Image (cartoon, rainbow, N blue to C red; front, side, top):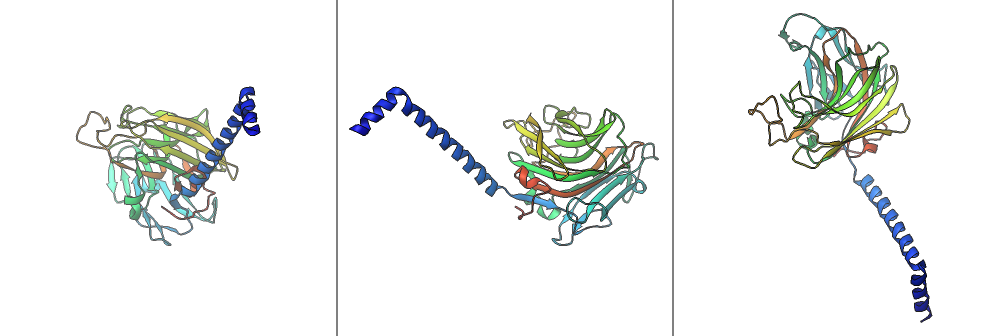
Length: 330
């Protein structure tokens, strides 16, 4: 009876209500911590690529001599003006990185295609797939899922600011020809400096080369001669789904990653449609997407030289960080 009387008195005075609220808050905090810990354990590496065991073949494909995996390369431009090398003079972790270099290419010659010297549409392109040929069926990006892609990048001191009105794509999510990429990270001229920004297309913008871009991250200046870690988290959802999301995380050197932008909206083209590509109805976007990295730009009288290292694709930002140890691939 005494306990019962105390309980009534606590309820009457409000103390019981306060205690119940405290217990409820503590339970919610515990649940959130358990959810976070569970997500950390369920998060997985999807793909990793460092350059300690990488070779280049005659078609400029990368090959991992340890796993046997091959990484496709898409090429356009002048062979004599480009250089792709695995180098031991620059690295983020380990002892090697990959270096992409393209010289001045504006106004070089007529349309010619000869072996790897493909000169046709006014662009310079050297882009490698992050997903190896042997893992395409399992590891390509599917709509409705979340993908975090991270890499370390460094601009060489000799790199020149891109010409105004042009962009250099260093990372993209590609949904197949002839469609423009649904998402790209590009370098561009921002107030005389070299900025990195993230841009998106979907069924509303259209997918043709002249279609407008939506800005997911407006651009942050990168210094030459400095390693940066960048992670792009993408909740990949097209127009027939609820809105997706793009988050961009960044750090200089080994400093902690910081979220620098969040954008909500649709990314990519509904595979059941036609991508709103210049009113063409004879083409359909692929149901899956390929992440690629490298240098892709309009020809210009500017030189670019940069390094990539420690590329990661994972289901969480922490595991996609270039500093994260690789625990096994999904």
